[in-house]
Image (cartoon, rainbow, N blue to C red):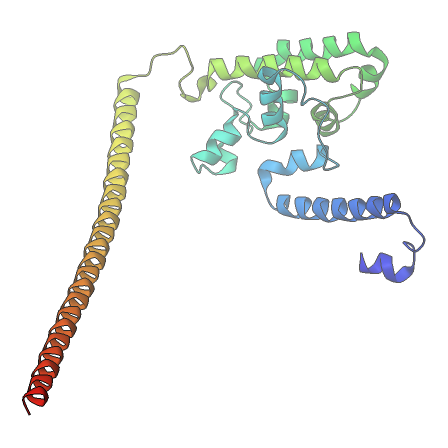
Length: 275
């Protein structure tokens, strides 16, 4: 804003023009800080490429059941091995896809454009987009895998946006229901093995113990605070009682002194009257 003022470009502007300049400068500063926060985060590499401006997206008014999964895929938090491995602190090169035998990391590009397990779902998405905007989809089909991925995560063309969100949302929902494929993670409808059940029970027990310890610590802190507050109240009440007792004693002494002075004065008057 100082530069705008010194160059004199804002001189002679009305209040609307000045507000537009201020909004633009604030928007630029926020976008710079927003992009700076995404630097170095591998989970947001794809998101940083498809999200060009800091503004509300076109899909926010659509049903949440689709938008939630679509946003997770764009933001690098979908139900893929690359995300689950990050939660478990598994090295990135070991977060391989459990659905195909290619031995590749199951990231967003592998899931959307490479994995053989989802060939029919992938074909259904592109056929639906072709029905919505055939010329553009045919043109994009000749691009490289990375370019197609970025175009798809951006929503495609104006005619294919809703198709992409709905089809990809349904595809990701199916992926969530089926679980982790052949890598051994449990799906929604599968029963865990005996070893997996014991491991799960052990984790649950540890979790319950940790929660119990946290509750005990919080209770101890609360009781210490309550005890401190009670001691403070008792001390305050004791000081007030001692102050009241001191005032009462002082008043009694003053009354005794006044009575003694009155008696001495009366005796002196009697002596004077007798003389």
